[in-house]
Length: 396
Image (cartoon, rainbow, N blue to C red; front, side, top):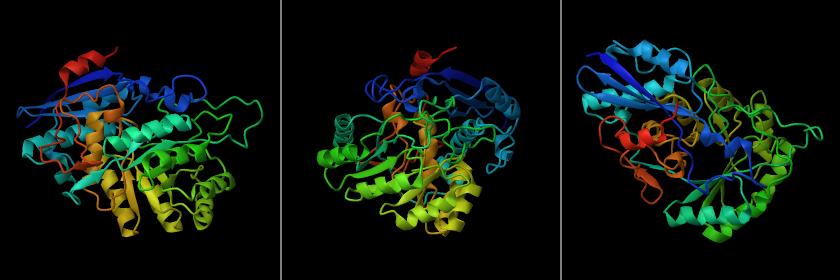
């Protein structure tokens, strides 16, 4: 059995109308333009007639996709070490990893999570999502989520940066601004959100949370994610105390944490809210565990690395969820298979792109029943590429 050829497509799939603020008070360059950044879809073909599909993160270069193709052509996928594939070090690693898990799962007639050690749970919770917007619009988003059966929502938030010089220009934006920022190692920039534009005025964060609580009731949970844009521990702590009266599930990345975990230790001792950081490497997980700096983790990374990091968290008694970059159906499904294989992954996940984008590029949508994705049984990733939608959103 050999990989005989690999197809690739460059696509841009915008978010649905109303998901993002494109102008005005709530326009946020870090969020409002990310869906215009291209992705790549790849499909592996093997000599046994089976195929496997993969989806890149945003902004991946064609050169890195081509390098992955060159590394796999002619190889027997059954002989590859799935925990560390012989691929060039780039963010495209995860694209080909999920395609190989899909191909091998189809070949061996098992779901991809079986190749990660087997299922540790029978369902994975998913929450709704809202970008920065007015309290009224935030409440409307939350009501929509609750109506669809979700039990909570994750909102983006920001405060004015008290350390920014008056009149200073915002920092340059990374091409991959969003939850996951790929770097050449194939992971992402841990805890460094300098690519986010500075916010000139505060969000009415407390008013937005209060609007959600009024619209959805006290049992509807809220995750607040500033992407480090509460900037300073003292400012973040004041906001945490103002939000204490609401049903806050977690405060994620309130301020920069890379090289600053000691501040998280102190913040956690004083904060009335649980705190999490968004990590991408085993080293970051281990450092936070050693310092007892967090209550939870939001974890990204390759499928195999995610399971390893979630296992590390499990040994420390720390729960986690799988992060995302507001992706499409193939990538979201790879996150879910990794989540099913992780015993500590019991918090609501971020696999939201499949219902926020205009199309997920797969035939059957990912099933979400009462806010949970049930354990899939189809082989591989269990998705079928939508050829018509692929042609519709292809670019370049």
